[in-house]
Length: 103
Length: 156
Image (cartoon, rainbow over the protein chains, first blue to last red):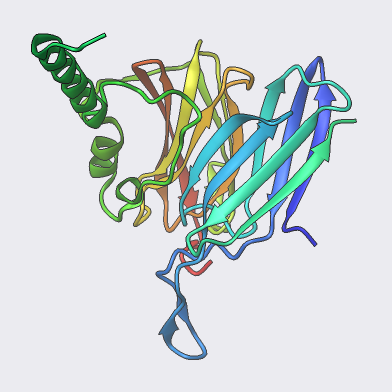
């Protein structure tokens, strides 16, 4: 299952894009209380949003964003059938991508 | 066409000047190019981060940036923020938390197809100012809100 969930909603000719991503977003300064060892940094660094294949948002993200991050954007226009693609890359080089069709 | 020495020299000089301008950040490499730059996410004080991000460019306070954020956050691990701007031509929105070890939370490069609007959720280590910087072309605008945090978000 993808780590990315995408919801869109058309409001007054605009399209609200919301995404919820499952990710630990560890910034590397936390201590694991059971082992007393630091928890290694593991967080999303880059998030890309595309509309019909064209990049509309490029985001540089830090460990200061909450666990299981939520982001929302507002697209001017957007039609039913348009494709929204959201992808991320984290500091360990892992990545995921998900597509969504505007209803 | 043969390239004579004078032409060649002229071209290499202008190319050199261009790459220098690029390196010093004078020439923007276009919107939607937010690659992750470690320096910008370094631990340090807010002022240092701002300097890394914007050099010494002037930042003007603006009431045309609206920050929706709770005044009191019971849980610093999840502080919802929504930024709406009424400025024209905003291409980048940066969100910074003054007292976090890493002040920069996220930087959003937005193409003209998007409204100058963004929502996210922040971690906040302690009561702190939250600063939003909107960049429109070569102009920088800022807005600020203070959030009182009752339980720190450092523990995740």
